[in-house]
Image (cartoon, rainbow, N blue to C red):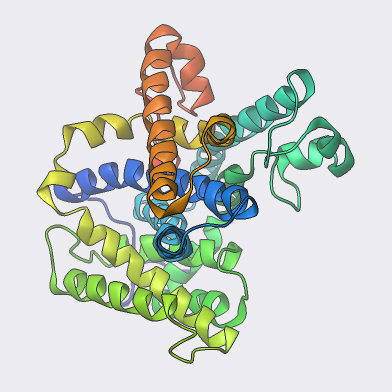
Length: 380
């Protein structure tokens, strides 16, 4: 294909550096989104453990429905969008560049993925089972290699499916570059239709590729992301409004599953705008604490399970949250405790055993600071 003359609608790579405001907002979003993921997985303490022993209160149940059923769901597509924004903005397909990308993703994604799945499998073998996580007998019945690598199923450490899917998206990213070179708008619409119109699952490779491509599309179209624009304000209010509609879908008569699921996925896209707007608030964007925590956000993600399951098992052995107030407190206290505990542990390990910590968190050399979740998306 001759690249000498390009129509204006085709999207080439971006050479200029990322705006400082945009970079700071991406950084704080890392720990915020990881926090939402931790809270989402901790909600099983209410929806399963407490519900099975007497039932969740109506207010606690509504809180979990709003957060886990809608708000927290935005975290995964936003991570894919940030990854695509950082990687596809400048990546050009050549054999050496692709080989370097594969090598870097092997270090930053595959090694932590296999390591933390393997550590959990070793725990099952040497220590014992973990409630709601599994046991050695379960691994044997499912296949040890199958569960450690997550081949055709969720991995043994179930939240780490994201790393597996992200690695697949990176490996197949040259297909997305063809869209940028030939028909960028068609590519965006096609991927959205495949995900929102044809795929029954809220999370899938269709959705992964759409969000990843969307990030690259935003970068290559040079959409002004710094500051607060009208579309950020409008998208925020639309997300809030549609979330209310979806939470109340039954009283509102939205009973057709396909319609509700389509609206849900549209709301996930609006959620990207919502969180981007939230990140613009100075108290969030300029928070020294959030930026410091972001340095270890990848470690928090990698280790939050089985930490959450073990902590909640211990808590529920001595405390049976009854009523809305106690159950809401249980939700937030257990989630925040895991986040703070693992952040502190990351700070300690990065100082005591920096080389080991670097390997475990996907850094390519021990002199680098701990890699955040989207370090893998920088393409370098």
